[in-house]
Image 1 (tube, rainbow over the protein chains, first blue to last red):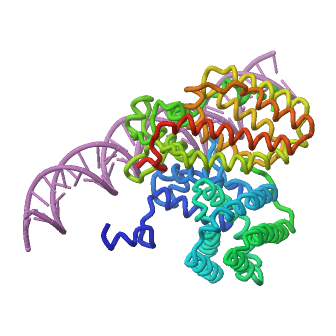
Image 2 (spheres, each protein chain N blue to C red):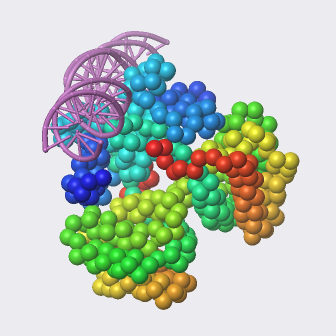
Image 3 (cartoon, rainbow over the protein chains, first blue to last red):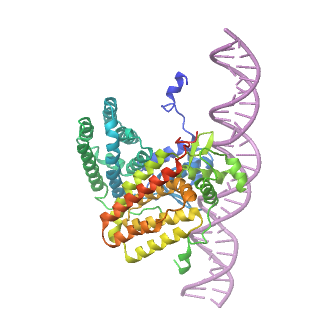
Amino acid sequence: MTAIDAFAGGPGAKLSTPDWIADQLRRAILTGTIEGGAQLKQNDVAARFDVSVAPVREALQRLIADGLAVLHPNRGVTVSMISARDFRDIAELRVLLEPHALRHSAPRLTRSDFEYSETLLVKAAKASDPLQRASLHWEFHRSLYYRADRPRLLAQIAGLYQSINRYLLPAWASSGLGANWIESHLTIVTAIRNNDLDQACRLIVEQTLESSDRVRAQLWSAPGQTNEDGR
Amino acid sequence: MTAIDAFAGGPGAKLSTPDWIADQLRRAILTGTIEGGAQLKQNDVAARFDVSVAPVREALQRLIADGLAVLHPNRGVTVSMISARDFRDIAELRVLLEPHALRHSAPRLTRSDFEYSETLLVKAAKASDPLQRASLHWEFHRSLYYRADRPRLLAQIAGLYQSINRYLLPAWASSGLGANWIESHLTIVTAIRNNDLDQACRLIVEQTLESSDRVRAQLWSAPGQTNEDGR
DNA sequence: CGATAATCGAATATCGATAATAATGCAATC
DNA sequence: GATTGCATTATTATCGATATTCGATTATCG
């Protein structure tokens, strides 16, 4: 391990071709550039990225594993549909899993963990790129849960945050973060700092549901599609 | 849609090549024929199944998505390691998610649902093929939860049952199901039948933890490997 | 002798081309 | 006039061959 390796994983970290393609497609899907139901033809994608179909197929597999796309055997893959039902389902799981994670993590969090969390929150609010903001937002929550030292639980919550971007990003884009986005998140950190775990969990639940309601109102004020898969 | 379409997806449904290969490998991993840490070289697998590497790579991707294998970029994929920690993590999530699912599902379960559940239990106990037994065991639990009508929640629980097979099958193989396997599972159905939801949830938690302890004792009476990934 | 650089090898990753698949439209038949 | 069978065609799935990658081994140099 030499000094130069410290940059591994940083901005200089080269992505594999499938990861690169998957990331580009993911971004397009999450930001709504590609809509639910759209067909992702392997030849088209390969042409657009100037690669052969092999890495494209691999990239599509990742999107499918993420639940961002649906495979129709021999008939291609389409971008999965979003729905109010699915969104509610995600919020419900968050309310179930996150307090659980926090209860195991909070007792082990250190002062520098808190500082890191708060830094992330500010960075997230300032971020101009919506995907970067989403990523920092998740990293904030992750920083509160990771001391639980439960990889599987954390992975499940991570999946929920990944999925929720599909709904959250359009809402943020159309009406911003909300007046006291930073402050309300900060109260969670403060509650943990004060060893008031019950209060922290209450706040998480409350804010999850609140944010949920706001997004729901935002996205389904006008009626949209509600199918689960992209048939 | 004509009547004949009702058979689509039935026993006659042919698996795609990648699915077929993935299933074979899965079986080998779950039954312990292939051990944790073993390297899955795409050329070897391709030769063994007499196909080219393309479908093999796809099959390996599925195993990776399942958590049964780990990808080391440019260096191949290895069968993931099992560990007491991971096993505990799974049990904890089951205890968290399954009662939640049951609470939403139970009020909607019908008499014929119960009959179906009980049938599955008997079939599972009788099954000689360990993977079929595992599949019926999950299907039993699924039949109790599916009326919750929460696809995401159900998918997460399904993933846990898939993962737990890695631990459960060897334990079953070495010491059987346990004396009153059917009966103890039946008490859950009975409790639901009697509208005693709290009791049903208690039983689930209790049995999950009990079974967990038994498996743990079984598998780690002699010390084994405990790494998370197959490095 | 120790550290750095070139080489090699075993495996993955990618490519371009071909084969297989299933929906579609069209014609032939009852 | 509706149903069946059959080419058409758009697209995925698979193949065999080639390029690339990265660790290990060996060689070179201070």
